[in-house]
Amino acid sequence: QVQPVESGGGLVQAGESLRLSCAASGGALSLYAMGWFRQAPEKEREIVAAISWIGAITYYADSVKGRFTISRDNAKNTVYLQMNNLKPEDTAVYYCAAERTASGFSVLTTASRYNSWGQGTQVTVSS
Image 1 (cartoon, rainbow, N blue to C red):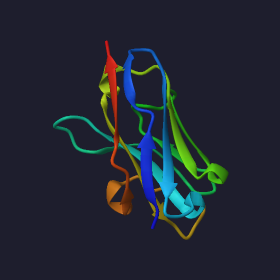
Image 2: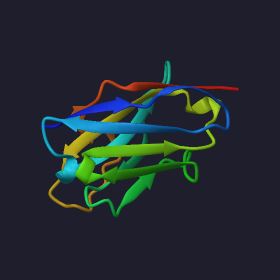
Image 3: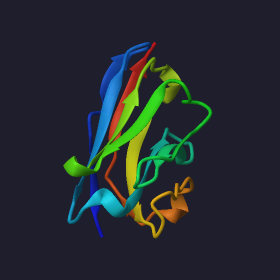
Image 4: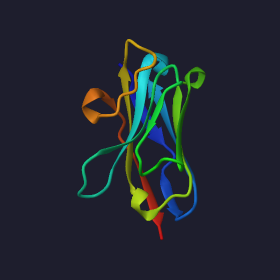
C-alpha cells in the first residue's frame, strides 16, 4: 500500500494561486485512484477533487469548479492540485488519499473509500 505525502501548502492572499503535490512512497501510484480532501476547523472532511488512475476521469466539488485542477503524472509518481483564485473559505488542511482500483476509470469521491492518507498540508488564504 502506498503512503501519500503532501507538500505545497502555505499562506497566500485571496486571488492568488498554490499548487499542492502528492508524492507516493512505498509503491507506484499508477494503479491508484487519487483524491484531494480538505478539512477546516470544526468542519467535516470534504472532497475537493478526485482523479482516476488512467487520468481521464476527474471530479470536482462545486465549490472549486473552474478554480482548481487535479492532474497526475504517473511517471513522476505524483498527483497535483492546482488552486487558482483562492478564497478565504478555501482555508483548510488539505489531504491526499489513494486507493487501488480494478478499473482505471474509477473515481472515488467519498473519504470512506480510501485507505491510504497523507498527513495533510495547511492552506491559509487571507482576505
